[in-house]
Length: 151
Image 1: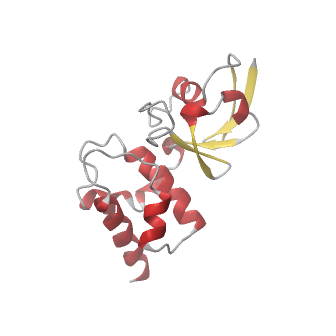
Image 2: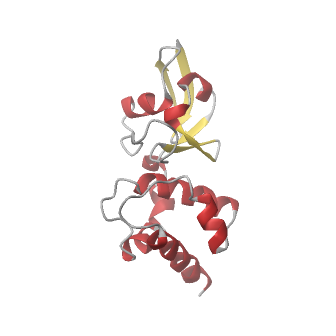
């Protein structure tokens, strides 16, 4: 079946099977930041933005994304570059595997709520699995980024 969508600002088309998952389609299109982790919608590694909202591409059929605006980290480098250094400064990117999911969710959070509390940050990022850092580094990095914008 043919599918059409906007991917990282560009109109694309592709042929997919009815049971094709969005993660596989995106990786075929060169979006390597979208990672396969748990395959049970529990780790957040496959997070992309669909019409500006975070979705888990490992549990979304490609055909459900037809006609929508999809962004992966490849298409949001400029926006992500504003705060990823603050997260790295906290040692929260030890292995780097979870970073794309955290970054995608942080972008969505800051678009929705430009000045979140620590509890709001924790709640928004709760669907991301990180085995290295214990999550406090990401929180400190985001908090430091927000402080730098106000200072």
